[in-house]
Image 1 (cartoon, rainbow, N blue to C red):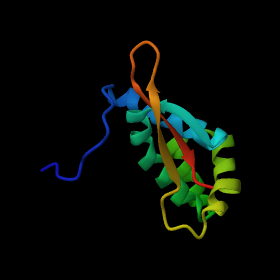
Image 2: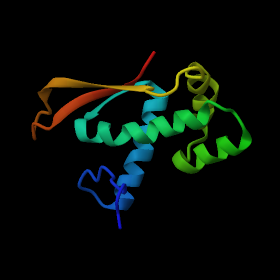
Image 3: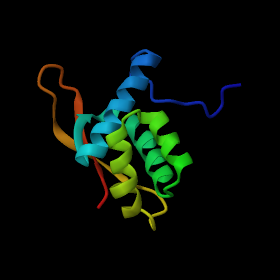
Amino acid sequence: MRHGKHKNRINVSPDHRKSLMKNLCIELIDHGKIKTTHAKSKALKPAIEKLITIAKVDTVANRRLAFKKINNKSAVTKLFAEIGPKFKERPGGYTRITKLAEGRVGDAAKMSYISLVD
């Protein structure tokens, strides 16, 4: 049975989805706030929150887990040096999704900002 196996599929192949989530995680770690489609931001939220939960405890094993997920040395360093300690006492809810009123020019896709909570 496949109960509880839901993923936000965002209408792309599994390899493309994995690569897309990796790149979006890196950009969110680097910039703190990114503008993307609403579906992509909803799919990104669980992935980045799991990474931040890992980064709250700075061990070699956790760094390796995070590097396995995003495969970017500078992003992992920033995640463990700045973002992880900032959310040390927070039990969850590290990101915020803010919907935008206007759609994207061209295909009118719903857009939103996903940002780290301060």
